[in-house]
Structure formats: C-alpha cells, structure tokens
Image (tube, one colour):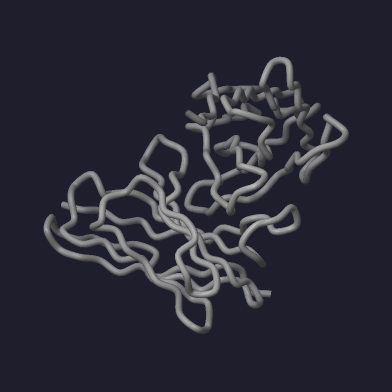
Length: 115
Length: 114
C-alpha cells in the first residue's frame, strides 16, 4: 500500500516568491495535516483538514494557507516567502479527524530552501 | 502553555548497550503521548503511543516507554541498541479531546558506535 506521498521532494525559491506543496494521503484517509520542521527543531503544527474543511490552525501568519480536495489530497501554499520559511514541510494523514485509533502517518516531506 | 522537553540534544551509545531517551511534558491534564523516529531524509515513523491504562507500553523495533504521571515523563527505552537505531527521536503530546494536533519536542539525535 502506498504511504503518504509529497511532491516535490526538494524546492528552491527566492524571497518574495510563492510556493505550492502537494500531498496525497493514504488511501481511505480523510484527514490531512501539515507540519513545518525547521532544522534542529521538532515539527510544528500548521493546519489540519478533514472532509475538505479546516479543523485546526497553528500559530502561523496568513501567508500560509491550505486546502483539501474532494479526493482528500491537499495543497499547502506559502506567499511572500521569507528566508525563515526554509524548512522541511511534512504532511500527515489519518483515517478520521481524531480518536484513539487514528494515528498520524507522515510522508517524507518537501525540503524548501528560500534564498 | 503546553510543551514537550527533551533534555538531551545528542546521545551516543555503543552497539549492544542499553538506551534511555528522556521526555518531559507540561500539560493541563494527562495528554496522549507518542514517540516518533526520523531517519535522515525520511518522514516520521510512530514507535509507540500511550493513551491510558498500563503505564509501560511496548512499541515496534524493541522499544518501550514508561509513563510516570508524578514526574510528567514518558521516557523511551531499549535494552540493546542496534546500529540501525541511529536516528532522531521525537516525543510528542496530543490533547485527548481535541483534533489530531501533535506538539513535538526538539528531538534527540542518537548516534551508535560499533
């Protein structure tokens, strides 16, 4: 079975540009979450989507946005990129929104470098 | 504020030696607790989780963790480390009643000497 897939794997952008990262959840999973992992730190929660609706948002500026499509895949968009946005962006999917039997399954991430 | 502290940034052990990685949390009530492992260039893999009940939980790859409420700790252990265990380990907490948002510690990088 395919796991969580993210594209692209690596990306280099210039300050001020925007970027779109993509995520396909495990088949059957309806919830997708996004995390930012800056080098040397643990992942930080950005968004959770369930059934195409935003269910939670972390402490990130409005430059960060996301959406979930009818097939449950998701996009993370970041506008007006800053050097500090350089990080590994992780997508995770789960079967349902919450619950004991709905652990998060993570993809391998997209490495974004902003120059 | 909710937080997770992993006091050890780097740990080096010899292959075959025992391992304990520390994790302390700050939370209003007893959260759900997790340990994840991340190999270079990879995503996070769930090692084990604690929701309630027996405070000693078993996970994959021979890992176990013990929840101690009085110490707000959830330390990860392995009796005999293999070279393939070299990776970064993250402790995380989640609100039992909330949506699937994890709060992670900063991680502990484990090196294994042959």
